[in-house]
Amino acid sequence: MMPELCNIKELKANTDAVWSPNGQKFAVGAASGNVFVGWYNRDVGLWIANPLSDKAAHDSPVTNVRFDPISGKCLVSCSTDGKVICFSHVCEVDNINDGPFGGLQKDDKLFQFKCTEWVNTVAFSPSGSEIAFASK
Image (tube, rainbow, N blue to C red; front, side):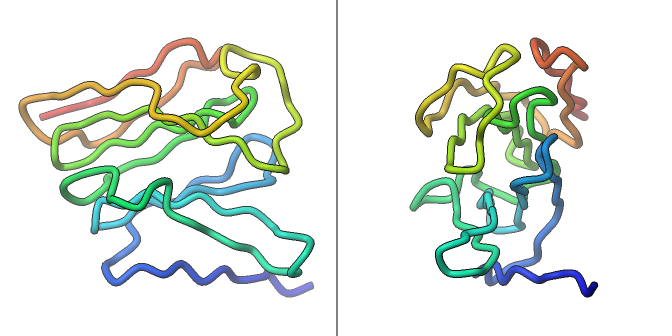
């Protein structure tokens, strides 16, 4: 079986990608500062990825994106702009209601940290209740 492709409408480089814990959706960070989330849309028979918002989430390239390890309803991204942003993202493929973010029902920006230098990477703890990030 051949892998399926997803076209992401991004003019700059895509810098990181990750699958949700259940493998039903993925996230992509881009050099434009956009964060995309995609999933398989059964109605059209294609993988579709859309930006989290109309305006780029970050002011400079995204360096890392990660889903929470339990429900996959929470996504954290970091960037060379020094920001770590935590978003909720809920779509039709989300069916796990466990973990600290399992009860989320809508898309929203949950919180943001601002560092004085760019942030290289971010990670959730195995329980999904803490995040860690590395900054210069």
